[in-house]
Length: 351
Image (cartoon, rainbow, N blue to C red; front, side, top):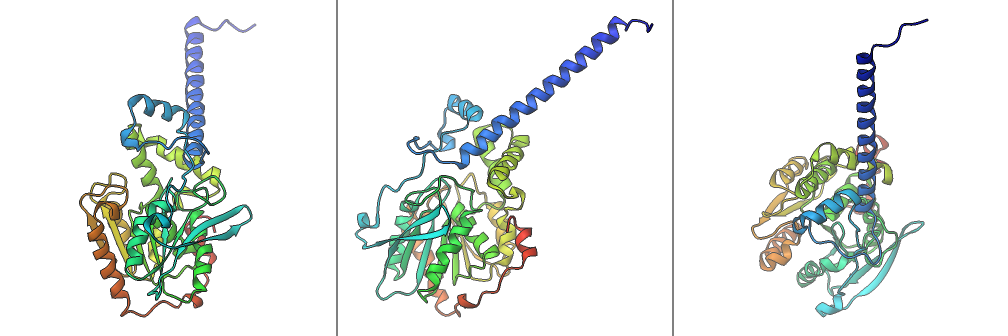
């Protein structure tokens, strides 16, 4: 018969057992919360109210959304080109089964080329209409696209530029048939989608105008955590993990700094100096990876929103000068783009 366990030893084992269960329960709870957070941030709900900017949330709202996830209202178009006295047609493009995109086409006669406008996260194509007016004034035909999940397009989710790059590629095939120089102009997530489309999907525009792209998805998520006031570590890493699981891609490989290495066209990078989400160092990291140095401009009064809205005249001057410089440069042959090899495609995420 074995001797009885000493009471002190029994109490120690009980304390360690309780501590282990406590740690396990905390980790499981944290992961469940962040799984729900990742889903809430990437799935739109019809009828849900649009959220105020993170910086405008009250402490109570921040706590509520930190625990339950914010209800993300589906982005809808509140204006059309007709509100800006522009004639337009509505076009639909099939990307894949279950995903159709709605676009507005604003023709210019004669046309110096075509500009494809790509909106940001939790926005729709109507938010790009002020930009469209300027490009139309400069003599360009303009296409505005609703990414999947937004406006008049189908689906109800966003992947922060990853799947949206497939949307860009699908629209690109339509624009190539117009036999005109095509310029991509994206804002925030839209600029990231443009970069990935060029790096992975063989999109070859005459030029790209990129406004406030994040340098890495992990950086973008970390900055959001900092703005809300929650610990970036390990929260941002776990949000990336569960977001990648839900959307089927490697979030640590969704990096515009790497996509930039495959971009061969002229590039204009712009950013608002008051942008707290994409900082100057982030844009510098991307700029340093392009094979040819891009043009870079900042707008003193703009944040992480529309530089055009904050200083329309300067925006028109900068993009007008950039586009005029393209007229003396040979246009890329978009019909003879080579296939991207599987090894490189895998290095930047899901092929």
